[in-house]
Amino acid sequence: MKKTVFTISILLTFQLVQATESIDSLLKVLDKVVMRHAEYTQKKEKKIATLKELLAISASNEQQFVVCGQLLDEYFYYQKDSALVYAQKKLKVARELRDGQKITLAQINLASTNGSIGMYKEALDILNRINIEKYPDLRIDYYNANAIIYGDMGFYTVSKADKQTYNEFNKLYYDSLLTVLPKDTSLYCRALTGLYFQTKEYDKAYKLATIYYPRSTLPHEKAMMAYNFAEVYKHLNNKEQELIWLAKAAINDLESVTKEYVSLRVLAFRLYEQGDLERAYNYMNLSYEDALFCNSRLRTFEVSQMMPIVNDAYQHQAKTKQRLLIYSALITSLLSLFLLLAVWRVYGQMQKLAIARKDLSTANEQLQNLNLELFSKNNTLTEANRIKEEYIDSYMDQCSHYIDKLEEYRKNLQKIAMTSKLDELVSKIKSKDFIDDVLIEFYQNFDNTFLQLFPNFVDELNNLLVPEERFHIKPGQFFNLEVRVYALIRLGITDSVKIAAFLRCSTNTIYNYRTRNRNKALGDRDTFEDKVKQIGTLSK
Image 1 (tube, rainbow, N blue to C red):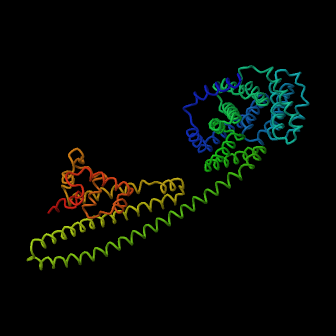
Image 2 (cartoon, rainbow, N blue to C red):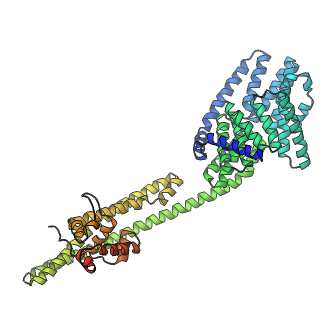
C-alpha cells in the first residue's frame, strides 16, 4: 500500500511539472523535426567527413586509435556496417601498438558492435576470451557490453528457458556494473533502470528517471531516459503520458541523428491505434528508411512487422477521402445545375410579369372612371405588384451574386483538390461557414428591401403593442426574428410552416411568437394580425 501511494505521489508531482506540455504540441514539434531530418543527416555526414579527413592525415597509430574510436562512436547508432569497419580498424591499430589495454578496449568495442547487429555468438566469443581482471579500468565497458548483449538475447529469444538464462546473465552483469560505476552517471541510471524493469519495480524506475532526466544534456541520453518514462507509463496503463514521453524520445533521437531507435516506431503504432493514420504512416515510413539506412536487421524486422498494418489502414483512409472528394465534386456540379435552372425559371417569370405589367397599365387607363372602392382595390393590386417587382429585382441580383459565390467556392475546392490537400478539402466540405454567410447576407437584403417598401414598419408595428412590450431596433440595425415574422405577414405570407421554412427555424417557434405577440396587442387580439397586414403604404 505504501509503495502504491508513493508511486502515485511521484507521478502526480512529475506530471504537474509537465502540465504545460501536451501530446498535440509535442507532435507539432516532432513534425517539424521530421521535416528537418535531411538537414540533421547532412550535419552528421559533415562531422563524419571531418573525422575521416583527420584519420587520413593522422601520422601516428596513437592518433589513429583515438580517431577510429570517435568514428565508431559516430557510426554506432547511425550505420552499423561502417561502425563494424571502424571497430575492426580500431582493433587492428591497437594490435599494431601492442598495447594490451587498448587491444582489450577495441575487442570490447567490436563485441558491442557485433551484438548490436545481432551477431551474438561472435560477440560473446570475443568477450569470453577477455580476462578482464588484467585490465580493471575497462570493467565498465566490459560489464556494460555483456549486460546489453544478454539483455537483447533475452528479449528476442522465443525459448522460455533461454530467456530466463539470458536474463539471469543480464542481471548478473548489471549488478557487477553497478559496483564499479559512479552513481552520478547516466550509465548508472540506465543499468539500475534495467534491473528495475526486470523485477517490475516500475515505481523505483520512475523515481530514478525523475532524478537523472533533468541532468541529461546530450540528446541521445535524453532520448533513452524519455523512453524509460514511456515504458513505465505503458506498464501503468497511462496512454496519454506514454505518448508524451515517446514523442520526447523521438524528438531527441532524430535531433541526435540516431538511426537505430525504437521510440518513433512505437509512437507510430500508438498513433495508428488512436486513429491518427497520416502521422502513423509518415513516422513508420521514416522508421523503416532509417532502419534500412542503419542496416540494423533487428530494427528493420520490428518495423516490417508493424508497417503493413499501418500502411493498409492509411491506404484505406486515402481511398475513402478520394471517394468523398468525388462525391463532393458531383454534389457541387448538381448544385450549380439546380441554380442555373432556378435562374432560368425566374427569368421566365419575369417575362410573364413584364407582360402582366403592360396589361395592368392598359387596364388602369380604362378603369380611371370607376368609383372610390374600385380605385382603392386597384391601389392594393398596384401595391402588391410593386412589392413583387422590388423583391424579384432584389432576388435576381441575389441569385446572380450567389451563383458567382458558388462558382468561386467550386474553384476553391478544385484548387485544394488539385494540390492534394485532403484535410483542408474535407474541412471545407464539412464547414457550414459558407451557408451561414449566405444566410446572413440573404436576410440583410430581405430587411433592406422591406424597409424600402415600408420605412416606418417597426414604428407602426409598435403602435399596435402595449408600450412595455414594444420592439427596440436602433437605426442601422436589422430586424430580429420576431419582427421578420411580421414583415412576412405584411407581405401576405401567413402560413406558419412557410414562415418557419423561410426563417430556418421550427414551426413551434413561429406559433409561439405569433401567440405571444397577439397577447401583447393593444385592443382586440383577434384582429392584431389583420392590422399588421394594413401597416403603411409604399414610399413614392
